[in-house]
Amino acid sequence: MTDQEGDLYTPLSNDFVVPTNTDIGATSRQDGESKCTYLCGNSLGLLSKTSSAHIQQELNAWGTRAVTGHFSHPQNNPWVSCTDPVNKLFGEIVGANEIEVACMGTLTNNLHLMMDSFYKPTSTRYKILCEAKAFPSDQYAFQSRAVAHGLDPAEAILEVSPRPGEYTLREEDIINTIEREGDSIALVLFSGVQYYTGQYFPMQAVTKKAHEKGCICGWDLAHAIGNVPLALHDWNVDFAVWCTYKYVNSGPGGIAGLFVHEKWHGTMQPKSAGWWGHELSSRFAMPPKFSPTKGAQGFQQSNPSVFAVASLRGSLEVFKAAGMMGPIRSRSMKLTAALEGLLKRSNYFVALDKIDQHGSKPGFTVLTPSRPEQRGAQLSLLFLPLQSETMRKVFAYLSQNGVIGDEREPDVIRLAPAPLYNTLGDCEHAAEVLEKALATAA
Image (tube, rainbow, N blue to C red; front, side, top):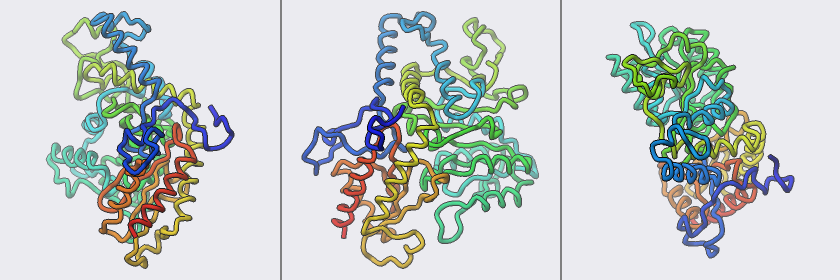
């Protein structure tokens, strides 16, 4: 699917419902019924009309078929196998075989399941290598898994930090840490895209180096799936987990997914078995002995929410119609570069290496790497002076004027032009309102 006008003004898909300025409480806008400028798909994606239709179909099926809908469905999508279409699309979007993925659970629950199976510390190889300031849920999971093995998290968790004066990690620093500490590392587990800075980590290179040193390598793809190209099977990733309510637009609290590489399917058995992971041929016979479904889907535990699956399926079908990640990534890179260019032309922009010289007047810089291959759709804006009220004032102004991003205390606002529904016009409007916000703050 391509832009109808041959430029960036028309989105790849008109399948999404964009809230109006009135809907989101943009009190300073006079055009209340106009669509807001929504640049927050990195936190929660918009509702797809296809998803809405699928959910309505399932509500109708529930009303007309009740329990028989598990096997007899008006749209021939019986609930007992409702995740099958999603697993196929999951495989395409993360670069995996269908048998290697499972639509199930929530991100952190799936992370615990994977770490329970893959994190096997010994007296000499026990560390978990991650990025400093990983998303809190990951940090909590790492800590709790270390404690479960009788380890002190302060000793078991090894964090890679940016160099002094820098905000993102250098590839060579990650690789060198694995080379230096690899004999003591049991598990390398980074984010595919870092939630705070928007940095896209070099997944293939990190995975390769981890394996060279005998480490297991897993990935949290919460900010990567639907945002950047992935090839989990070819990169030989051991496991990965993800949520789907950000760039994949499955809805708040949407059902998640996981990946287990095919090389583990003969030896890695689920340690926390549940009946929905039992092979389908005898699942409803309720046998006393667990016989897992082959591959990643053997890790399933309980039957999934049909409505959550329906919503996810709808959005993934939009991805499929748009050509999956090839054209979507191409458009994303153009939009993000356009937004970055507009921001850097601001009277209030400060180069990242100049922020220490910046005075007391309001300003901002961009933390996210400028090289397109090192980032996804998100740009993280750091507001100056640090630890001041600048970010809060700017964020309030943006919101009141119909530009929706999200804030990270104390000084960062994240803006993400999602390629499925954002336009160059959105980027231009956001930059214009940001300029006015900083002028007001000044």
